[in-house]
Image (cartoon, rainbow, N blue to C red; front, side, top):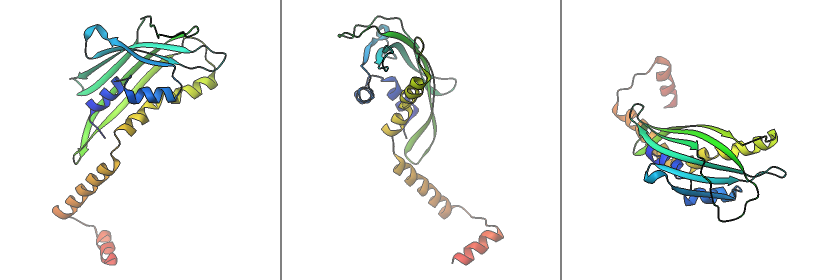
Length: 193
């Protein structure tokens, strides 16, 4: 229940306060924005350390995120690719394993209901954990990495406004447009009265 630009900006801001809190609650050991890439406002380098169960080593992911509007498809996209930067977390982490993440987040505006802006999003993501990870661990971790879609939905949730706009649109159609009924519909109306 937001514009494509708002959804993409929310995804791009990986280190926002809201997402920092969510990351800490899910066990992230670190989540930091290193810097804007080469002074560009539409690029950001970030790093995160994900906890892994014993005896596996924790995984570090460092990536560069780029946001832009695609004029050909009229959508806003965020691309995430791995970066090779060495990160100083200001603390000691025992032997991290470097993983890689690739992602394409796409948000496209759709027809809005009333004054409630809406968009359709898609997320394509590939994660290389940097070595062998047992299937049961992967099965636990994948939903955590994909839950950001539901977090995005929750952050902009305006269901009541959307429902109200849809009902107002339907009522407007019923009151102001000529209605043509089949014989069965006319019989149902007669019985209802």
